Image (cartoon, rainbow, N blue to C red; front, side, top):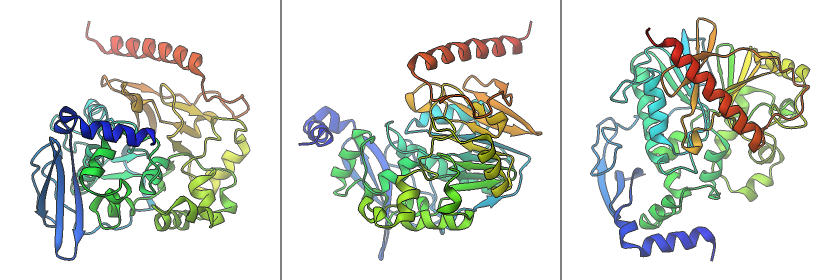
Length: 387
């Protein structure tokens, strides 16, 4: 018996554990109509729903959702907005994610869009690890509707964990969702199948987004990319077409295998780990995509970091571990780190040129960096206090 199956059986056999379980909705589309399903205190609660009409939850925090009339392909590129923000690697930490957005005035106190015509980019990995991935997905879905109505935009870029869960790779999944799937008599992957609202929406997301002069991608762009998928639109289309396909099927297609399982945009860490991309290779990628910088997640640091003199920015600031996290903000040609306490710190370009050894930090380095970051954050907060 696998470890995950043992957990599922233990939770199902525990009356207290089953009764406390709350999750949903999962919206399934059928020929005769659509149905939203929740798990409320361990009991399955279905509700017929219609496109465009808000439905209210029998339990949980996801309520007042209106289904999209149609889930169309997300844009491969958007023009330069007056301001944008980006956050990565939420990993089921919905409350921290929303708290960070509130602190930085992206949303208001009621978790509604407050960023006007600005653009918010979710740079991959909403799935896995934490216990509230369903809530985070629906929050992004709803905020995208609200932003569009206000003239802004919310774009979710796919990460490696979206790809993993949709093809049934559950190594990092919170055990809670195995129990939910068992109660709904589906596999976890089927909860996000092509007949579901979230499954259809996810399959229309981009993997690489060009937003004005900035390229967003979860893992990174390898210098080898041009030989595998040289063109942005075709790359996004290929990943959309194969998202959710079984690992064995992907391995039978050399291009898909590289994109989904190798050093493709979902997994690449070569800006951080040896052998690192050279400065010249990064310049070539920027020229190829006609951008000034590449923003990535995937590789965890204790704070947002600037690499290659500001040409690569890593924004996975450890939100997944249930700490505070950070988001990256751009406005008036100024890049800043947005902190969970509401303060902001300028992000200098830095002196990294790609020649240093791997900067994927070990535990000691991360502890030292975190202590220094805490000191800097306190100094920034103290500086904003009125005398």
